[in-house]
Length: 367
Ligand code: GLU
Image (cartoon, rainbow, N blue to C red):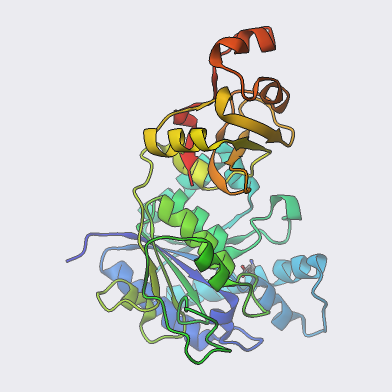
């Protein structure tokens, strides 16, 4: 018997509409049945549900464009309808649902992140199924997560989930595009996410939802670093949710990595937006990756963007690859003054001595 788990189920628009322009309620009932079956087995279920924009379009009965403001208006119309449908379907099984609408701003700020986490946990403790979507009606581009794949990864981190199921209109990740290449084969298990795989994931597949395989891969990468196993599978598949919990795994599975134990490091993974980049040399990369060291000024070759002490920044290599992210102990102006300097020169360069570590080990996560 499996131990009780927290499972985040992400349902894309294409799954909820079955590829049509209307919500497929018959299929939604079927998904609810499976979620309730998991609950009966003692697991906790969280839904990240798209479909607000699609539901809004269905309700409006008038032609409407695809600009950001059109979509925001449609989300305002459709979100109520969407949650109403979920509520009535879960009620068939005597299960309550609770709606949470999030934006990136809710995870960027550590206090709001902790508030969201507490609400999510309280819902789970009361045996309620949280149903989460982006707060599309009010989210401007700066505070938008932008797609529900990445949102579901943040939710999985917030909830300390064991599994994230990204359900979509594809069977999983293929060796090439199965729509154009008959030889494409399904990748059953992914242990490393590299550039080749990112290339395979390509762009967006459907035009109703926002994400595609590329955003699913991003989401899978973030979640597995936080210790969450991720499965991409076809949402229309028979008993797909139940199968994801069995030995008969459908789709593509991404093995989880060892998660940082520190809650603050998990929050860093959940992706507050970075305000700048610090370029580091090969010696610094190896010190970070192999020796678990902090970043010293000596290993810094450049800094981009304007940031202050305590801001979140990305550490990149000379090819623009992100190596780590974390909270800087110096502003961008200071980093530019001390880059490449030996630790004993810092006091002189800045006219005050505040240590040689640009990023302390405790304040960074490797990517
Ligand atoms: N939040 C959008 C909606 O509910 C969907 C975003 C996505 O599919 O990634 O319609």
